[in-house]
Image (cartoon, rainbow, N blue to C red):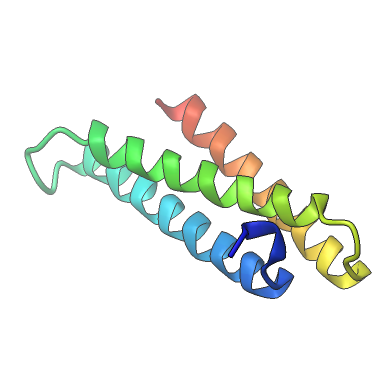
Length: 95
């Protein structure tokens, strides 16, 4: 099944899950670089977190580009794009 044919609420749930997982992974990497819980390089964890955030952002943009969606779904998609965009900007500036 094509991604454009899936339900909008399911796609927004997946976008949220990918986005929040990416934010948590980046926060873990950032916390470990500050407090040194584990003596290991955190570049891979940070990269995976940013990649998950980009994937969640792309799913939210995909939902926004669909043709026949309700205003509630459109507003949720816009909020998800804003939140993930700001978090990506924050983690890029921290690196």
